[in-house]
Length: 102
Image: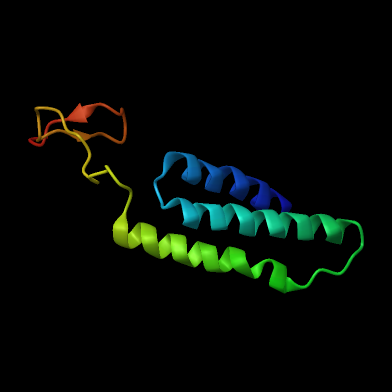
């Protein structure tokens, strides 16, 4: 859980800086993961920390997941850019484009 929390702080602060999601949502994620990380540190020192400390992470994960599914990332169309040759597809063997007639 410690590694999840440290990675979460980095990931959610990148959401905050890039503004892919509204800042209050990403700030809530950073705060929720930070509280959980402090709780994990207290557990390492032998204190009892209830599970309620980590519940805001679950709420944040559900909110951010639904928001990204519904709204997407601003400025991203979802379609990959293609070259002039629309009949080519990547070959799994060589990684080079392959003609459809083969």
